[in-house]
Length: 542
Image (cartoon, rainbow, N blue to C red; front, side, top):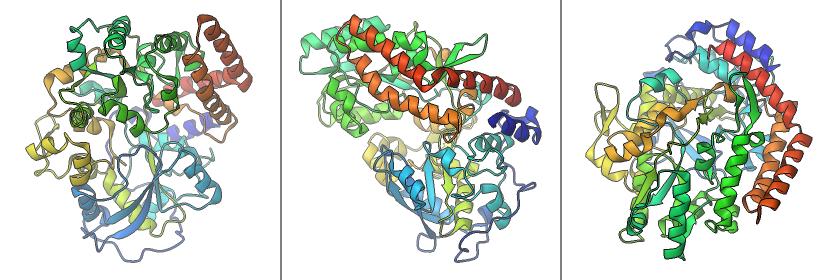
């Protein structure tokens, strides 16, 4: 069904224009028939950007915004940037952050949805005319001056709950083409990263730490000389041990088992993942991380170990600004502490990314004012809105250099050192409609050259295969259900493998895990992904 949908979508657009960095135009030609909202707007909208007049917070439409991420750094639509977004887009959001990963699913099942939703986990279920308004119908009905590019629309439609549905219900943010990344300079795609306590490493005599074996040797030294310190955190639920999986070439959910033949496999079934598991188990058996850290479900709880000086290695995201914030927070608690980033080792295999967009904003059928919502989303998808959300006000917080890279004010650069102060003053955390490259510049612009060099080393090993993301089955399909069962099974089974007390127990647990995956249907899913990826590469000209 998905293959049929892709063919229909791409026959309607010029395939040659896809993935060439097309920008949105001012045309709404070809928009679908108008939607009938459940309630009309409380006031007429007319004026500047997308038909929205600049509004004060008091004049703005108030809408509920549900953020479907427990780790999201803020739940307050406050600060210079959100307030300016409201002035430009006409909406002020009342933000609710998810309490747990199941909360939105329960809301969908009950039909009790907020006005606007930002999610990555429930995209397939919300791309449904029974739950949400389609963007194209709202754009036409209200004359919104926005037409997303053909590629973004095509990718969005692949998530539709009904494969025959020709509308689109979101535009996934956080995406740039490989061609755009190839032209970018001084910025690295978001990856999991090993941060280590540089001050302690120097006290150990600055031993070699260029390879994964070097890392083990250094952790042994930490264990001996700092017995109260956890060598490897392994507690951050989002990034737990993931740098090592990436370095073994198995960091993505699906990878090419054989790129020459195009064979795609659930990463856990590959030899690369087996080798990663052996390494992770070795770290455990060396006593480098405690089993209780594997039970941590809140990123802040894991981070507390880092900023309170309780661990030597902390796995997190590869961003210079996060490194600065980690240092600032830790130095407030531990005098002389300094974190640094371990570069990608020379021995690392191809580091697989599968990014065709990450999360999307949805306008539910319960929305009090769908016109205001689509106009706000259209503004936030404009170049001005994207830059404002991440960088602040042009001419005040930043200026663009000759390469289109933001150069930030001294006040911004000082404030960003403190994560809490950054949220309070500017609050550039509402990356609801932004691009990955623009987000990258937020973290890399003006960063220390040595720090950038650490993050940039072996960048040529990083490869993005968007087709591996586009091919993922819709969650409600048979293959989608198999995928969900695989992901559910792996959580418990991986803990057994990480903490196996001997080689014999590890091998036995691994065989049982592979048997379980086969029983669930992993081979059928692997074949489905292989077939889908082949067609997507052809249709999208990858």
